[in-house]
Amino acid sequence: MKRKIPMTIMFILAIWGGISYFVGKTPVRNFDNLLRNRLLLIVGAFAIILGLGSLIFHHSQKIRRKARFWQYSYVMLIALVVTTFVGLFGGVRGEGRLPTIFGGTMLGAHEGKVYAFMNRDELNTFMSNPASYADPDKALMDLPREMDAPEGEQVFLSRYHAALLRQEIELQHAGYEMADEPIPPMISPVSGETVRYRADFKISLQALYEGIMVPCGSTMFAMLAFYMCSAAYRAFRMRNLHAGILLVSAFIVMLGQIPLATVFIPWLHDLRQWILDVPNLASKRGIMIGVGLGASATSFKIILGIERAWLGGGDE
Amino acid sequence: MATDFWTWTAAILTLAILSFLYDDNAFYRTAEHLFIGVANGYSIVLSWYNVVIPHMIDPLVGAFRTTREQGFTTAFFTFDELNVLNPYNDNNFFIIIPMMVGSLYITRFIPKISWMIRIPIGITMGYYTAIAIPASFKASIVRQLEASILTRADFSSWSVLIYGLFIFVTTVATLVYFFFSAEHKGFLRPVSNIGILAVMVGFGASFGLTVMARISLAIGRFVFIFKDWLGIVH
Image (cartoon, rainbow over all chains, first blue to last red; front, side, top):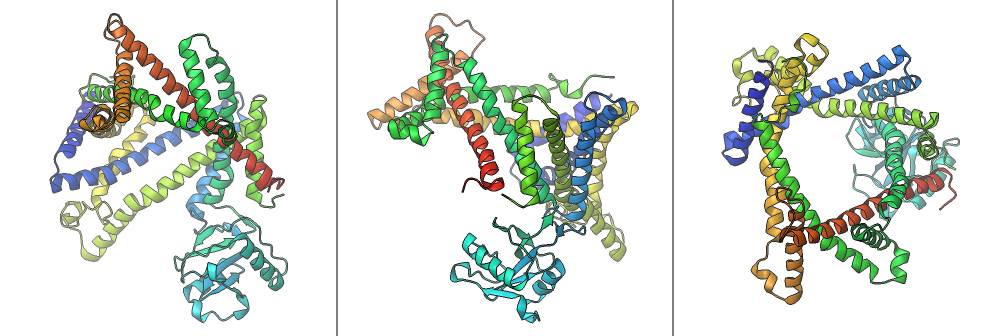
């Protein structure tokens, strides 16, 4: 029973998946949309709890048993809790209830003028009714022609104009500093319009993503370049014809991508493109057909109950 | 040099991860665990905003509110009257059913009923396996065969014919090389030899492209360090 029930349910869903592909009638299509875009999405969301529970359990056990490198489990757990807390209460872009932006200057645009604000409340008051905004001193400069944007749309500042604006802000609000880097957009929580701001410090989910996830992820992938070089040394030794072809093909593809190499050997780029477009394409096509046949065969094996690894081991 | 807190954080983490090139060390392990924690927290938040709120909380809250205002009817469970077939529709108790099925994932932590986790896995597995068959058959087999086969258009000029023949022969040879049900002797031997040559060119090209992609990522990180963080390069 513990295996037959799940397998029966799996088989029924598989039959439905097949029917929905081949039957184009509206009721079938509608129920399939409901199943795919809503019901299975909800079912899948609970899998995150399982993964998260396993992760927290694993690291808690490591800390409890004082296993090797247990101290780093604290780093993981604290990072997990802080990110979740900031994201759930501070919003993805820092528009939630939690204060995520500290200090700095916010910018808004209305009728050809750029306005600066000290905090979000000031900005919100302005965005809710720009025309009645009472403090004309907040208007810093007229928008130059190339910055002229319809009301409510994004205003992109060039580095030159940002510098001009910074001068103006510094004149009017001594002590406030504008950085040189582009000012990221923020959606106004009141009007939904996009404004630009520059905060002294922010800890939104977006900031955590850009400040931790992106550099860590891209550096880890970048580091593979060094390991691939050492792997290439082993793989590219010309021990036989096949290894030689591998070496030449990879060498041409890599060299053809370097601008300096194509300056000295002008036809290298064309040769690289030919390798990618013809022999590489043909071999990949053969492999892809094989993979397609394999994937279809494995799918059939799962549906027909021949392949049961997904049921896992354990009790019956 | 940058003054922004997050630029400094990103730069320190970049250097911490690059320090693994020398040896495994405390800086790398800290950055690695930080990355795992933040990435998991990020996925929780995204799931909360993209699935939990719009597909679970909002429909249920809407259904309860409508019940309070208009009274309870079985219409909350039907497909037609409340137009639940619209994936963006709200106000329906029907959503409780997939929530109950999804919550069976948690039975994994209760040994006596842990087998019930197979039900949501089976539902997901069955549906997605079934829809993968026609999709994979169409994209990986039919479309590839269509593109490889020689047609009348391939005979329009010598160059097109040679190109088409080359692609056709090499694709068939690659397939023959991976055909292990028969011993590669007789006619199959030279054909599979052509296949292995094509496969080697393909693998070499893939290797070259992957290396160049990784190198451009590495260049990106060094540009970040020397330009955005240190401000040495302009």
